Length: 239
Image (cartoon, rainbow, N blue to C red):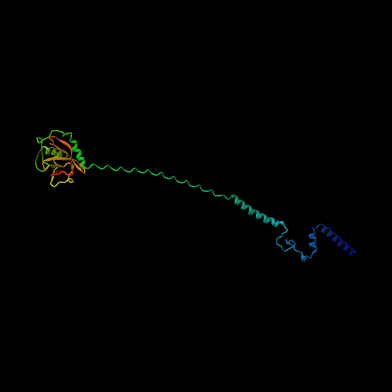
């Protein structure tokens, strides 16, 4: 009885096993039929000493959660990373308006030489002693500029009068005994014609001397020109 019971149990187990195996995939069935020593479990599901059960999805969930958290952090960092706003380009300073060039100072007109000024003074006297006025040796004048008294008449009288009018009676005069055209200045009194005639210089150029004279054909004459070659006996000058 016991033997029969054992056989029945075995048959039942075989039958159950057969039914179970009939529902299993073919590769699992073939693998189960092999020796346990030849069976290779790539996942180590049957290894009781494995710390992690690779067949248990719970361990994967833990790592997935950590990985997702790190990934999410990275994404948040990427999202929150603010691209720096470029600094606005500085507006270049406007070029300074160039200062207007100063107008060059006008070259001052050369001051009329003192000789020319004196000539103008002499010409103004033409109103007092006009051209053509009768003038002879009867017209006399006392002149003291040479340091002594000179009783001047005729042509000498007019020259001395004009000299005192522009220089003043107190201005001393001197005599140049060796005259030349170069030495003559406006305002000088010239002795001409072999020391027989006198005239006063009212203007001078590089080529001539212009004079005013009395007793010239018994009258006053202004503006006669003497060439630079004219013989001058001597000069009375106040320069």
